[in-house]
Image 1: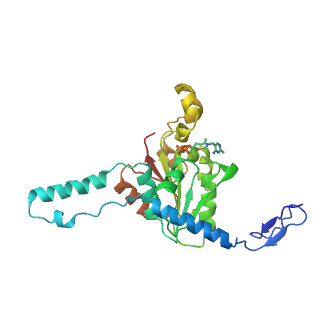
Image 2: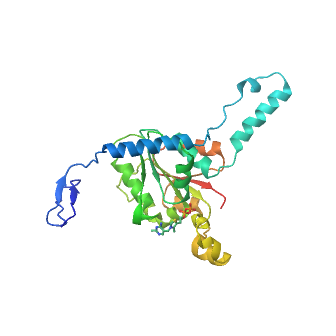
Image 3: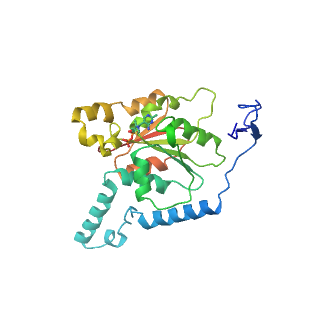
Length: 262
Ligand SMILES: Cc1ncc(C[n+]2csc(CCOP(=O)(O)OP(=O)(O)O)c2C)c(N)n1
């Protein structure tokens, strides 16, 4: 009786869960002064601790130099920047850079959201994450909901780990006749749940028990999974491949796999 239940009138079906459900067309949470102060302090902290991961600008002077040595060094630097292997920090930076206020970003629970929290500066883009008991449950389904309910024209990007993807693989199914949202599911594939390597249990469990119970390794071919559900698929191992995949035209659902070291 002490729970205030509000039903959003998305359909014409009246929903009265507790005998005193209130109906509403929309709900918004008004930020109080304390909330604003808290989030401003958080944004300041985040900006002060952000890591500069922006790719170096091409050395146009060096590239145009008539001295072969100088030009070669500039070309090498350019190639090194383009070929840099993606790690978690470069992955979250690439997705953050590609995402604009008319887009949406959904983080799965696990390592990537923590790396993003550690390294990224603030940016005015809508970001969603399931917290609490949801854990890794339903991340893709939640993101598809965010994509379909948005009135903005942009792309919905989901950044999650491989187990979170496999756990919710059923959400890749888009029944005939349903809209196919503009969505990119970007999966950092490190072959299992590597977040547990940082827990106390890693210090006491045997390696084989850690692997079997915590890592829960898999060798699922994600390109085949994408094909099975008729999603477009791309694989990115370097920064330039990631940028190409993220900025490709998004007509329907896409899966982008980024292999990561454990
Ligand atoms: C429904 C649910 N079951 C189990 C867990 C426990 N859990 C937390 S993280 C995780 C593994 C995540 O693995 P992955 O998505 O590959 O991310 P990574 O740890 O590699 O970053 C699991 C099973 C959870 N959060 N939610």
